[in-house]
Structures are given as structure tokens and as C-alpha cells.
Image (cartoon, rainbow, N blue to C red):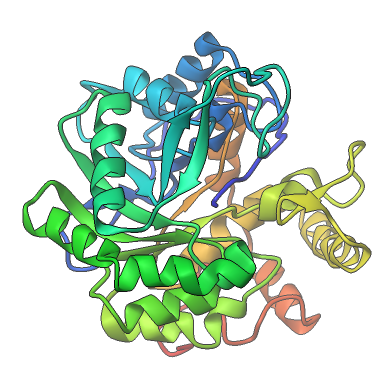
Length: 363
């Protein structure tokens, strides 16, 4: 889902703006660090309206121009807050998602966590990947955002790991039920500027690339400092097809921000991190520490070395987290750190690393 919670400590403000990269063959340019707005939907904890606005405005002040939200994030809360904070700001790119419709629900206890969100919004998400479902989702997102145009529309959370035994049914909605055709139609009519998927599964990306000309894949957690499974098939395919990758969850749901020994149980893949993941993160921390580099800095910068990666979009829940995140993003990292990670088998030897002159050859 691209959800990522950083738990970063307050840091200094920086003024150097991030650079931009183009998404595929579209005219959409995104800053190389964006902001995932799941935390604005009260992911795991409550964020006030004022804190949410301050988070977004601080990101804009520091040069971030790409913001990703979804109807699912807080059951409409994230989109409403995103629109209120970003409406009228120049050169901002917004992506949102389709695949769930929000249905009103009576009698819900809005003070408890639902699907990871502590949201006051009296709605429940219902999957709908059909032609009409995608169009309705797009129209409803425009209303919540208060915008006349959405830059990027992504099919959200399709895949076997998400849907289990119902994956075939959901995929049939998307393919035979016309969901992909609706996505294409919105792009052809210029209602959106780019289309793609927003998932945390590699196989569904490859499957849908066979079925549609996508512009961008927002992939959460599968090409990070912790794991690089996407380099086997997906990244070479993206390079050959000219499809851009946006890396959601660059902290793998939090553990690459908090470290393995956090006071609260570190999160990985939206749940408690298993022992083998914590051990691998300890090894990553040790190498980063030996070079005086914060682990989150290496985590934010690593994915962007691949030529098909356009942006990373961590989820920050406060203005201080944004400031610290940008400082980490701009932290100088010696090439020797990447060499040590490679020599200890902590990153895939095929993965380009920042500063490498052999990035293209690595693929």
C-alpha cells in the first residue's frame, strides 16, 4: 500500500531542493523525494488537522513537489487533508489510487483503529476494480481533493498476497470487467496525465505490464536497502519498456528508520519485524555506523541509483520528520559504504549504488 512510518527524530531544515525525474514517456516530472500521505489518514496514530497541514507545507517549503495519497488512507481523510493543503500550489504533482470505493457506515466506533487507521471518517472501503468502479473512484477522489485534475491514477492493492483466494475474482474485474479500460480512457481523455499501479507485490506488476501500457509502478517495500527482489525481473522489464518505478515504503514500514533495536517493536511489511529481518537490519546499521552515516540516509538514497527509479516516497507524520528526512536525503555518503555493503553481501551485486559510474552497465 505504500504505507511507511518513519519515527524520525527532529532535524535541521535544509534549503537545497530535490531534483526531478520524468515518469516514463509522459510529461509528468516528480521530485526524487516525494511524500507518502498515509500518515495524514491517521495511520497507527492520530495526527491533527494542523499537524497534517504543517507537514505538507513544510515539505513544499523544502522543495518536495510530489505527493501520493489514496481513498483508503483514513477512508478519505488523507485525500481531504492533501487537497486542503496543496490546492493552488504551483508545480505540485499528486497521485491517488482506485480500486476501493468508500461506503457510508453507521454506528462505527471512530475512536478505534480500523485497518491500521484511527480515522473519524464514517466510511468503510469496498473493493471495486470494474470499469464503473474505477471511474467512480476517480470522480470521488476529485471531490475529496477539491481538484479538477489528478496527475497520476494508480490501481491500488491488486495482487495475490493482498486478496488471497479472491485474487482471480478481483483480477477478472480489472481485466474483463473493464477496470484497465477505464484507466486507459481517463488517460486518453486527459483526465489524468499518467496511469499505473500502486502495490507491494512484484508478480502483479509483471502481469499487468503484459496487459496495458503503464507509465509508472508504485512499488512498496520490494526494492529497498533491505531487499532487492525487484531487480530479478521487474527492473530490467521497466528499463526495457520505459516504465518508471516509484519506491513506496523505502523504510520497509519503519524498521530502516527506527533501526532493529527500537523501543517499540520495529515494523516490517506493516507488522512486527521477524527475527531474521531485525538481524539483517542490525548488519546494515553496523556498516552505516562505521561510516558515520545514519541508516535512514542510506535507505532513502539507495533506490534512486537505479535508472528506472524516479522517486522515493517515505511517509512522514510531522514537519520535524520532513525536515529530518530531507536532511537524510541530502546527507553525503562515501562510496566506501556501498562497497562495504556489497562485500558483506548486504545488497545485491547487480544493484546500482549511488555515485557509481556503472549504473547502466549493472543492468
